[in-house]
Image 1: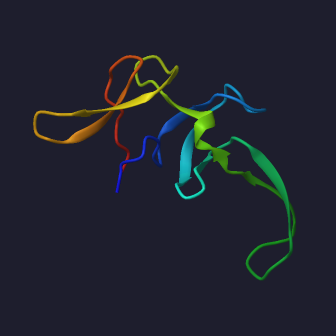
Image 2 (image 1 turned 180 degrees about the horizontal axis):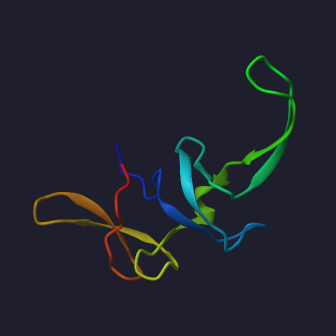
Length: 108
């Protein structure tokens, strides 16, 4: 399995669309659809029927956004950056921000 450039927990910046410039944390990545859910970005309103667990009404939740419209936030200055890979001396493969060369912290 190839390692993905954007992962759950990453801080990202939206590059295009109505939420351009917004920042958020990746909640979920959907590799098959090439999309991700980002907290507070691409909010959509859904009409939900009342169930035993939840009440009905119009609720707002995050809609999936295309991965190509997202960029990793550079750990150094917070600006959008592309992602590269680097193999450390101990043989571990890590993601780096192309903009500054900083290692992108893993959030597991």
